[in-house]
Length: 310
Image (cartoon, rainbow, N blue to C red; front, side):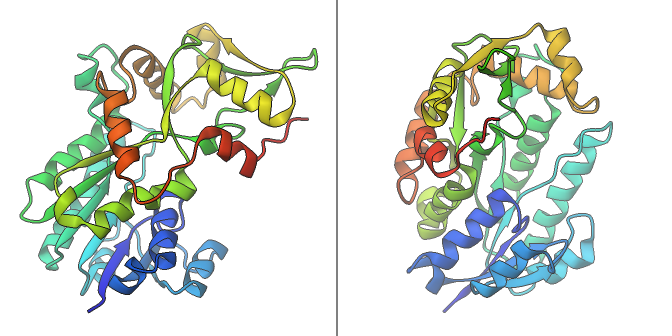
């Protein structure tokens, strides 16, 4: 019997990875019928999923009726919530996650997989005040754990895709390039190749749901310092790329105003406490070992996805 797997955010990096992994896996593709939920089924990414065998449906986390329709008759759901940086960030996002989870229970689903993040506020002992984009996902996770439904959790690290995009590699003016942040050069970040590897972690849960019930995959290939990151980019591009540690006030000014406080505190949290807290290295190691397939190193990612430096 084929079970329906509903994937929210199916045209994004995480949801798309899960959808494509299941559709292309010889075993999981027989176990699950993929129902991909997106706000716009006409977009090219959605059409590509449909051509690959997915059922594509229109749905919005803020539209309860569309959620109910998307979950009808399903067995398992992969939930991802959207962060919007404003004064309603936490209540809005929590409401999204709660609505989908409650609807899943009411519809008789058997399993929830939620894209979560660690409780950074608690881990940091309240040192940093603008970590709601982490903590709201942890709040949703705890709510899901309280429901009468089996669940497991996927907590992605820092996206490798962010280098050259969200965190640009910029020319310095002397023929060299730099990545800038406020943290020390030896600060280590847990990195995940989101597009190719998210599905490997979630696929492990789908393949052995009882084994991983209640577990959290701290999903990253490994920990990389900023010095190691710029060395890898230098090797891949053939250009000299350095790390530039900026004062907080300067870095803050380069960021989008609505997200600046959150991104500053996130960076300082990563420096002081690690992505997943004091056990980050062990958590990442366990998760990479339990992924369903080899996960991608930063060096491998940069070969497949070269950063174009002008």
